[in-house]
Length: 604
Image (cartoon, rainbow, N blue to C red):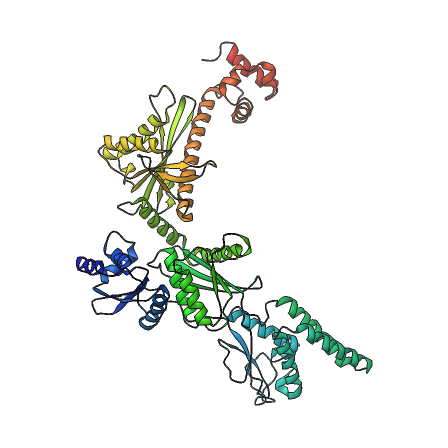
C-alpha cells in the first residue's frame, strides 16, 4: 500500500496546494498545506517517523490534492477544509476565540452590563475589547460595587419589592434597588457613569462629581455630599486598579509554544505594554515540526476569531508562510496585521514571557513521570537508538595521584536514579594514573559480572554514558566487545563551565543536546550524580586510609583525627609535622604522643 501511495505522490506537481489524507472508509483524517506538494506528500511514505506520524500514515489508504494559485490560497483552503472535516490528526482548537466586550442595553429602563463575544449593530453600546472573560467579569463586578449598582440575577423593575435584599445591600456594596429605595432615574444616571468609566473617561467623571459634591456642601446637603465623596474615592481606586479598561484594541498578541509530555499553545494579550489577558490550549503532540505546528495553530486560533484583533502578532520563531499568514489575518480582520519574530527589545521579552507561560502550563498539567518518559523518547530519537532507553548506566573515574583510583557507576531507570543498583570499583594493577585504562577496567568488570551470571549485575542497560570524550567511549566499547556485548555508548562532553554540552560517539561525532532543555537537564543531572557518587567513594576510601594509621595512636579518637587531617590534609603531612606545629592543632599531650609515634620508632 505504501509503495502505491509513494508512487502516486511521486507524480505530484512541485506547486503549492493542500493535501487530504483518507482512511479505509474514505474519511478525512488529516489536511495539510505545502509549498511544493510533491516534496511534502512523498516525505510521508519514506523513512522513519515520530510515533504519532507513523500512526497516521498507517491509517492512510489514499490521498487527494488541490493545487492552489499561491501559498495564501493554500492557507485559506486548508483553514476551510479543517473547519469542515475536523480531521482526527489536525490541531483543533476551540471555536469563538477573541476578546470579549461589555454590552450595555441602553434602551432598557434598567440597563445592565453583560459580556458579549462580538459587537453587532443592535442598538446596544459595546465597550472593549478586554483581555479575557474572567477579567471582564471582574471589571463588571468592580464597577458595580464602586457605583453601588446591582450585581445579581434579579430583573428590574420586575423584581422590585418581591424579595428581601441580598448580602451586598447589607454590606454596603449595593444601593438596594430591589427594595425600591432608589428611582429608575437614579439607576440610569449611575449606569451613565459606569459607561464613562468603561469609555476611559474616569477623570472627566470624577471632575463632574467633585463639582456636584462641592455644590451639595455649599447647600448644606452633607449626606449627599458624603455619598458623592465616597463614590469619587471608589472610582479613583477603580481607575488605579483597572488600567486595562480602555476602548483601544489589543496592541499585541505574544504567542508561546511548548512541546513536552503535552503540548501547549499560549496567547498573551498585551494592551499598551500591560498584560490584559491570557489564553492557553493544551493538546496532544502535533504531527508537524515546531515551526509548521505554530503556523497551523495560528490558523486555527485566528481563523475563528471574533473581534478585538491585535495590531501585531509576535512569534518565538519564524514560520515559513509568514507573508501569506499576514495577508490572511489582515483580510479576516479588515485591518493591517503584522507578524513579527523579535530578537531583542521589549517585544522579545513579551514573547519570552509567552513561552515561559506555555512551558509552566505543561509542567503544571503533567506529572514528573510523564515528562521523564517524553524526555527519554526524545533522547531515543536524537541518539537513533533501536529501543527506548529505560535503563541508563553511567561511569566516572576519580583518582588521588597514581594511587587510590576508583570508578563509580550510577543507574537511572525511566530517568530517575535507582541508588540500590549503583556500583563501586577500586581500579587494580595500574602503576600510574591512566583514565582510559581505568575506564576500560571498570566497564569490563561490570559486564564480566553479568556474563558470569551474577544476578546483582542484571539487567543490561539500553544506554551507556561515559564521563569523558570519544576516547573514553571507545575504551568502553572495547571492553564490551571483549565480552561479546554490543550496547549504545556515548561520552558526556563538558563545556567551559563544566556542564554537559553534548554527547559524543567513539568516532568523534557529537550530538548536541543544548537545544532541548529537558534532555540537557536530564543528561546534566546524570553526569552530576555519577560524579558525586564517584567522588564520595574516593573520599570514603581516603578517610578509611587515614583512620587505619591515626587510629592506631593512643589518645587519637575520631575528633582529633578529623582535626589533624583538616589541618595537614594528609597522613604524610602529619608524619612530617614538628611537635610545635602539632601543638597548634591538638593539645600538647596528644601532640607529643603523635610526634613520638612517627619519630621514635612506634610506627609499624
